Length: 461
Image 1 (cartoon, rainbow, N blue to C red):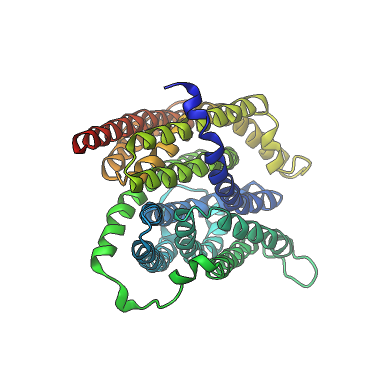
Image 2: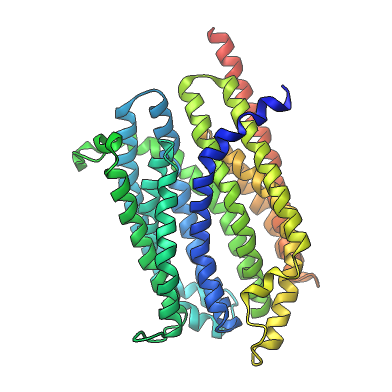
């Protein structure tokens, strides 16, 4: 097929992706705002937020990964004009997300003692504990919000989550400012203030999302008559069958990056803070890949509902192509500005922290070189996973991601980071290796699955 076959799909891809991207960036900005404001307090406070968020990211990855099961079922039902399937997926998915959110909060809350067994600096642990208490609670509204978001995405209404996130950020910034620094009548709460700002903004996200969706006329039929008696084991099992492996896929990747936080923490607070800066910037650009991943999932699910598997392949590859182009631009930006970007996260004029801050900036600038290199692989693995979820192929990709990240990537990170002079740079070489392996083998899996679907379609004809 010619290049034009794929590029003509770009406009539809962008139309679906840009609200998701802005929403994802909004999620990331909530965390980056915390780090920018907390970074002004010192490197120990920044490292504490990094350590606390390492627990949250693991729990959040499970919640977000699991909730993605809602989107392909809703999108397939929407394409097939099956209102019953859409309603059932939404209600069962929202129920399961609520249960999961409460469970993740409890698990994280009672996991705090693990920080003492991870070789982290004691001053960082002392600061991280109270911060983690509040941010753990924010997992409940966060995962419930995902239930609403994935339903809206499945209906191709990707703008709603963008609106909710924008409003959450508008609220989050001033709340953070007054609670962290103690402005006006508010006490100076430091990083605990940042955590409380996160809780409030995520509660607002859920309320706004419910209000917007329930007020939309064509969705009204999905928001009435909910009853626990409607819950069916068969539907719950179907969502878990897709959501469980999807959650594990995301968990394996996020856990690898979380391990980088812990490995860098073993090297000292400056390496840990540098890792957090580089990771924040890489996560920001990764949100573009995540937006196109959702686009791939929606459009591939629609084509599956239409039983048009040739078009499905064209649509998926068009998403892969536009993602590669965008991530290439980000890679070049990271290389060009690698020495300047880390300076935004720390107060270089703080005389008491000057030595530590300069060391953090030096390490972070080196890590951004590696981050530039893995932009392409990270983007590809994200969108291919989205396409695979669209065809509801999740089990084999789960095994692929586990092997890529934990059999291949993590041992490299551990050895180079702990037993060579490369330090944090060596940890990130392992991240690059894991992402490269995942991208290659996930694409091979997608190609195998879709070619099989095309052959089956020909046989049926």
